[in-house]
Amino acid sequence: MKKINRFVPVNIPRLYRDERKNINECLKTNWISSEGKFVKEFEDKFSKYNKRKYGIAVSSGTAALEVAVKSLNLQKNSEVIIPAFSIISTALCVIKSKLKPILVDCDRETWNVKPEDVIKKINSKTSAIIITHIYGLPVDLSKIIKIAKKNNIKIIEDAAEVIGLKYKNKICGSFGDLSTFSFYANKHITTGEGGMVLTNDKNLYLKCRSLRNLSFSNSYFDRYNHDDIGWNYRMTNLQAALGCGQLKNINKIIKKKREIGNMYYKYLKDNNSFILQTNKTKYSKNIYWVFGILLNKNSKYTRDEVMKKLLKYRIDTRPFFLSMNKQKIFKKLGYFKNKSMKNSEYISKNGFYVPSGLGISKSDIKYVCSVLNKILD
Ligand SMILES: Cc1ncc(COP(=O)(O)O)c(C=O)c1O
Image 1 (tube, rainbow, N blue to C red):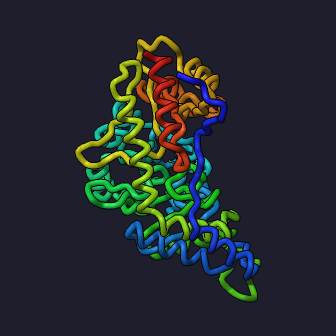
Image 2: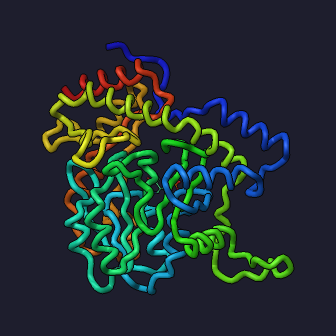
């Protein structure tokens, strides 16, 4: 197989005519900050798409999580259950709100937490659960939601990696008290950087709106008299203009993402050197945020060696998230001491993902697969 000269980046986003038209409108009309019609339009359309009443557009998925957790006003030092295998933002939003993160290990096949493992961690100190759907497959969440409701435990559903995915025919991001999203350039729809919180609860909506905007006073004259410790986590009209355009193309995007994922799956599924994330479960079909590869115990190379070899073939990859209990900063601060997260640690150490953005060509997917099958035959 011939090495190619061009570089295959890990993500190429895809922009459509609608985004360009909207951005031009912002530039022509001077509405470039967080004021402007596209922010409200994006909030309304995105919440409607996800079957929620209210949307609060913010500057990132991390900001969405921080605003969502703080808006719940949970009792200080109470426990919040989170997955061990996730982006660090999942733990940071808990710690920054002076709450205690409790880790749940993931499953080896879906890379998501299992309901029974989450339920085991619930006790009288639990105030909330963050349900994070991982890499394109949803958490099996009905039992978790049911038990949380019964025990007055709040649910934040992080749907950053599964925009447009359905769980048992209901859209992800429509469960829980609040749901959060990221629109970073590698997400299913992008605003460059950006995020959103969705809810059906008017009071939570008002609180999130206030927190994202430094909790300014609502009074015209008393504007600079702030009533909480908020953030400037506003989304700009330019970003929302991108978001509105992307949302118009969401069906096409989802179809394309699945095509990319299914193509990788077809060419790689018979290779016994690695394990792929489940293609479908009883309750859902993978929407493939990124295409992950998990090396087997008997792999002849380590993950880092494989990534290095792929780079030689001009193929860019990324390692999987690092298990929360292995994070340098959390060790330094004394979190998760002596906690073993067997699966999450294994996945962190042996997993990586290959180029899977919307802009990838079929020939590049085939190239990546043939290189992988050659290195790990
Ligand atoms: C599940 C999940 N939540 C939150 C985030 C954070 O989003 P952002 O990068 O927009 O801050 C990410 C980012 O990849 C994510 O995967």
